[in-house]
Length: 287
Image (cartoon, rainbow, N blue to C red):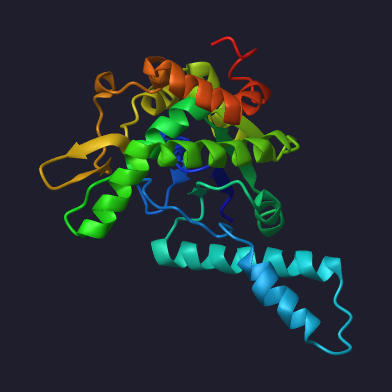
């Protein structure tokens, strides 16, 4: 029987690809797709399956007397159906632990109901660096972009609209992280703490009930970088780099925000300063 471990990101650009690449180095783990960690399994990116399927059907069913316990059972069976499909699709060996990830923590309650025996790690990231990465990724340039798309992206970028919108989204998800009850099934990790730290990687693997030894930790620390927003750049294209890169020396994983000017700092503080402190990234507003 396959065990399942789940990674939920605070939002896009929060480090799910980094953790996925790290976990993929573990010999007992099968990622999706197998052997690489590019796939996102966004089972509960929205609550459509409950709101638009279960709730509507039960409301329109006469005399059936469905209960909250029935809803929980439905979600659990829904999760098991998907798990069976994934196992068959990717021909996952029965002794492997299945790793799946999604860049959204919004419906963590549904993940817990669908996979009650799973271990779930939630990754959060300093909002300042998250916004830098998000703005850069949303200002991508593809060869198929027409003039209207290019113009919209440039306006959003240079007007500061993209910066403000991503900051507001970070605030919303930061509040969701703070509201999470951590227990034996769910634990929150900081992206910055997992970078180049044997201790934190060991804590993550232990939370997932995975074997931990020096060889495994060394391999995890050497995991290639995948999906960096500071990625592929050419005359016609600027986009995240999905080709694994083992040379970590060329990447700066945190504190990019320290190059901000005063206006950006003041804007971020006004919108997200409180949440930055609540998540423990700062002790006060004097940064």
